[in-house]
Amino acid sequence: MLDFLRQCIFLSQVDRLKIQYSGVLPLPPFTPYLKVARLKNAGMAVAAVCLGYWIGRSFLPLRSLLFLCIAAATATAFGNVVNDRHDVATDRISHPDRPIANGELTLAAAGRYALALALLSIGFAAIASPAHLIATLIPLALLVLYTRFLKATPLAGNIVVSLLVAYPLVYGGLLGSAFYRLLVPAAAAFLANVLREIVKDLQDEPGDTAAGIVTTAALPAKAFDTIIIALSVLFLAILPVPVLLHQFGRIYALVCFIGMAPLHLYWLTQWAQRKKIDNLPLLSAILKVELVLGLVAMAADQLIKR
Image 1 (cartoon, helix red, strand yellow):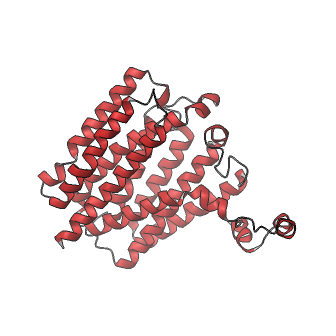
Image 2 (cartoon, rainbow, N blue to C red):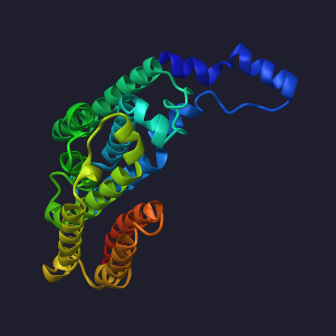
Image 3 (cartoon, rainbow, N blue to C red):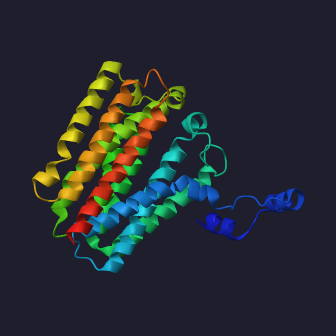
């Protein structure tokens, strides 16, 4: 972490020479740290925590929400740094633009950065509540377990990551009086993200194969399609459940049935064509949009009710 702070304050001699002879200002030295943290993912985690806090009717004071957001953002960044540090060999093939893979960030610096992020996450969660401290230690441990042992296990790794993606929603509303309202949407987010993780495995297959890593992408095609169809059917089936249970109302139903359901059916048509056209980035992007729409559906419904 000290390295990170020094680099934020001081330019290296090489950077000064670049400015002197090229006249072009280099990227700020802390840029690799921001890139490896993947701020978009951290932002989605923060949005989910806020939504969970609001919809779950958390009893914690509003200042605690700030601590939970910081804890969630730093935990998410921790997971990304640990993952990229572990995957440096495969990322040089599949994701050569990532800071550790391309040498912008050393393994040692990434390790210190990950430790600092973990400590920040634990510290801010402890300030929020003892329950949230425990609830923060669990995903941090799962992230390490995933990176070390489960990433190269077909489906198991996808399931763990997807649990962690759905987790911020319930984390924000933990111990709230309406916590139960968050369970089905979190389950839907979990299912959508399992599908997205499978697509990402396909995208990473060249690098994983070169490194001798076996992921879900190595499963037989028939098993692959069976898993995709089963997850999609289950995802579509649970979308209306919160409405049927009177936990959410018309706005939620409208976004789900006009937005998410048709979009997912379109996704299935694109999935069927994946061998003919290179559409894996599109498949991943559609699922991410579905995740965002799920948050929008919950927020809009809650806002209209109020």
